[in-house]
Length: 120
Image 1: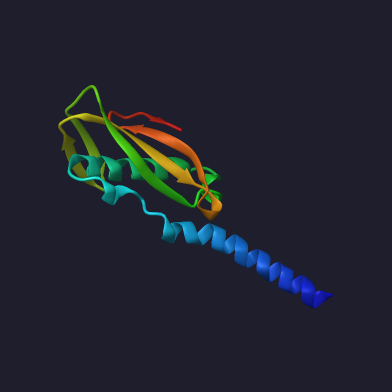
Image 2: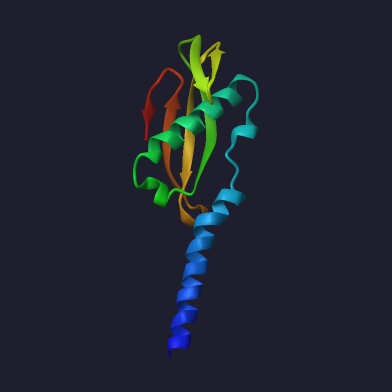
């Protein structure tokens, strides 16, 4: 009886561990899908979204972020800070960042604008 309980607990721990860890390795962050200015926007959007959810309990169930779309919006030029490096963009952009839950299940999205607003 105890042996079956231990095996069941071990299987549950393995499954939950796999569900939390595997998406981090199997899902890309999407940054490499963009080039030039849009790649800088992707880095900025990924960073802003990770900082936004970092101050809550959400990192317990969000296992990966992925930048899925970037579009030009009116405005520009715009200055952004990407990992401590100041970047001047010729246009204003809005990026959509997908949050992935356990086992890589797509969750909510966040819209991040280079002019300073975020909507999740």
